Length: 362
Ligand code: NAD
Image (cartoon, rainbow, N blue to C red; front, side, top):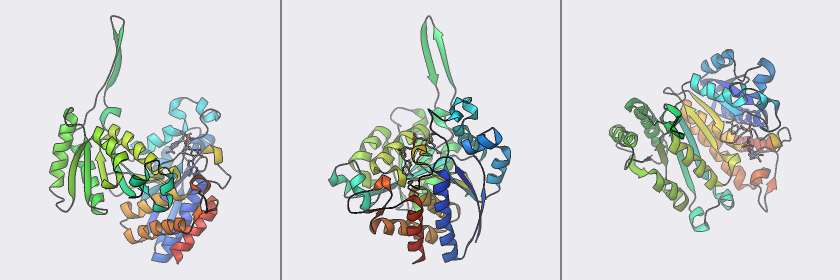
């Protein structure tokens, strides 16, 4: 298969971790007979330095013409970098918001996996963490409270602010379809999270999800109120497979789920549009404090590349090869500094990439 991938190395540790992910993709391509072609574009601070803006139209067009986009991370030290003296619409993050909008990426996927080997990093009680967990939060990314009308007014000296939470059934249906499709590739369970006991938008959400579920008789659907879900994530995270939810609930729950894994350098993410196209990136930032020192953990980006193979290209065997090689490398006792524990061997970013490549080849 010929795969055209646009890469956004970005800023900070971005170029280091993307280089390792490319190494892994090349090893998979060689093993399974694929042809990966990469085109790099600038975004964030790297683009500001060259073009004066965080994202150019040409860069967007290059991304649009690819089959998928693999990103490192963007941004610098927000207190010392000159990028943060610019107007907000010219800062690095504006590039990320602009590309998400230009590519119509409405579905955000964030897996939260507790690896057996890293169970010690989990802040939960041992009797909970020893069961492990492997869930994926599917968050609607372009609607809801963050995109509704808002205003602040003052009446008789009293300030008042209004935000509106709006969804139409088409916005709900397209994310629900993504959620069920992805559950079919996993443990076939969807937990749809809402606040249907209070909000009209949640009642519509629930009704549309029920309608979509009829086309997926092989997938189990359950509904959960958001406040209960927040509790269940720390009480019994092993019960979840796919959590399907709207924008703000997903924003909060996905951060909570990441934190219970205890290892930010391990967490992948993807944002998809209504075709197979997606932008894949680690959940963490550009870690300017360790940039250029070969200290970064490349695994979140490597697992993002694995998600790209699985969800944009339907290459499940190839994605499994990456996921298994990562697990084996951890099992063999290798760790980057951020996930280091007693009795393990600490390695740098490049060495971690090499160790994973070795295990893909074997
Ligand atoms: P961060 O995630 O970059 O770093 C937080 C801490 O985690 C730091 O100590 C860092 O060294 C460590 N860390 C992060 N990723 C790591 C990895 N792969 N390996 C080892 N250690 C790792 O968050 P921050 O410091 O709040 O933000 C730094 C910059 O990143 C800011 O400019 C911020 O806006 C940007 N940011 C970008 C994205 C993105 O590109 N999507 C996301 C979040 C933050």
